[in-house]
Length: 209
Ligand code: PRP
Ligand code: URA
Image (cartoon, rainbow, N blue to C red; front, side, top):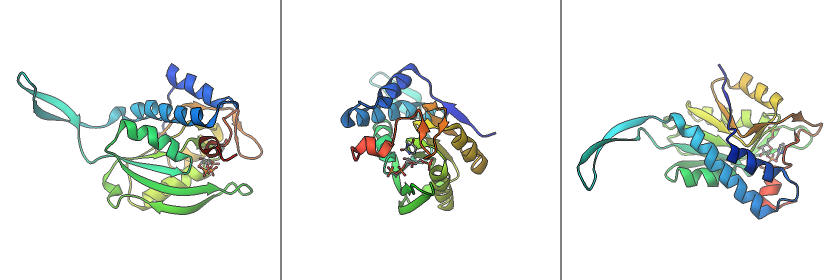
């Protein structure tokens, strides 16, 4: 069953609403992406496997829980994904990091790839793909296809905003990949922007427009 998790924690919703405001300046927008990423990451990591280990506290030996298995791999879909990546790395500092450069052609709304570098052992790691916007889902579908081609099997997709039609298309293409988002908006406009949305995430994070 395809899975969609809307992280509707009050702190996430409040920060997201601040981000939507068109007058929110670049520095504040970037800071808010980072803060929400941390909160999304907390939820996404809820089912990470644990193992029993022995530690010596100042008082006695204790059997306690620690994360099991290989370190996570975060894959950022450039360039807006880097905003989310920063916050997730604050939460999971030892994660490995991959980058996938994609931009959306404004006419065809198809993703154009320009860069790809991920850890060579990505197939052995849980992967979290990060990109703030899941609109038509063309970029998200291409990103998951790409990491699957590198051998990744345990994949989660994290975004800030999703469009319902994008989620449906994504789940049809990759039913095995759960989507975590802070909100599902009304839908897409003629230009493929999420409505009401927050505008162009990359431009707002980096102040390029
Ligand atoms: C944005 C966003 C996604 C994509 C989503 O990137 O970060 O990658 O659009 O749209 P889709 O679901 O219709 O494919 P953009 O192409 O604007 O590139 P940028 O991050 O470099 O600004
Ligand atoms: N990409 C964005 O940055 N914003 C949207 O609304 C859709 C795609």
